[in-house]
Length: 488
Image (cartoon, rainbow, N blue to C red; front, top):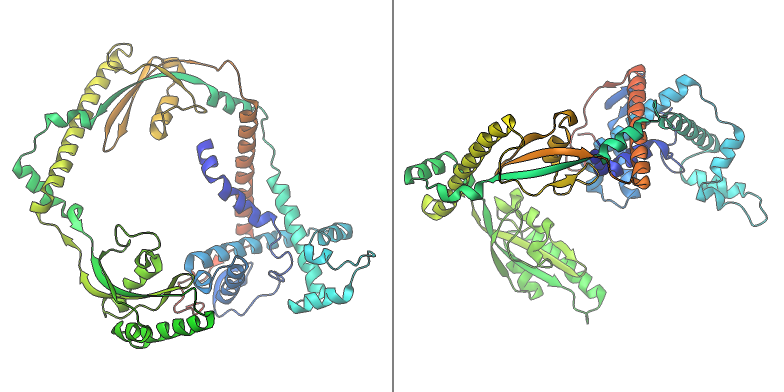
């Protein structure tokens, strides 16, 4: 449980912040009460729609706010995230309205004074510059009534969300119980049955190797790759920036307008046409990070239909300041299954590994059956170590879970853990103990994690209730935009 919280703590914090941080502190959505036309409805909340246009507009604003480009704003995952946020805001808005929450005047004033843009409007003598305030609102398409209504609405949502997020534990002793379980140490011994130790016992026949190759052809497929030629335009430190910009424009125009060859651009700008063989979708092996063909955008463009199928120049790509690249595919080498003669060594390695693993698993199964009858017997176990959830040592994942799940009343006990591709490990758990001392900081952190999980669960239930109450209905799922056109 805590492993999951630790891994996703940042994400959980960000999710909660979507609700706690004001959604339109100064220049965001002006009001939840105004909606666009219904011809491109995506979702309806309480009968009122969230439209494609609204999602795309919010996505564009958010992309600009975080320094993203138009492509990010048009991507389906980004727009879906924006839609989810709008939906959550609408559901919270419905809850606020239904509960008839109120915000006091002083509370609103205190909130406004925390906004940097508002604080900046106070003169040195403490008076407020009302004219600049109105001008600021007007520049953002808002009047005072809309602004105050939006801020009041934000405070109501904060009030609602904070009241839910302050969930208290039903039993204050729960954190101590869980911490105690995580501290409990178990003495463990391991006995490994690894495939590598059984390789000497396997010797696959020629027929077995051929049969494996025939049945697993995909394992021996060489991916498609291309041979390309490219030209690079680099700025000269002695060159005037204006002159270089003109060259860059020529470079881009020539490679685009005369897309069946790089020669016109190379001749015009006195550039050499270079070649590179064996470029895969992940790039060409052995190239330095600053090599033009190590740039993901260049490689992605080379594998686009126009470049790959029609042998067109790719559009000029700026790979770094003062460096522009264009390239074209010379030869496409389709994916192909390599002949048996070329991969026979690899075939034998894989067949031998699988056979050795089967022997290891079989031996482990036989040993496990013996130890179930007499857990204390058997030689070959490694030296005992003490492990706990807090201090797992070299135990991870399923191994740790299985060892810690053994009932303390049934010790000594043995568990068998499969390690696909490697073999099997047997663990013998002999005894358990509580540590001599406890870490107060760890206890506190675990209590906070339990509190966070409880609050998260409470909030999820809260949102599910109000989603149902608001009659949320999906009208049309979002679709990927085409050529940047919203809503298509």
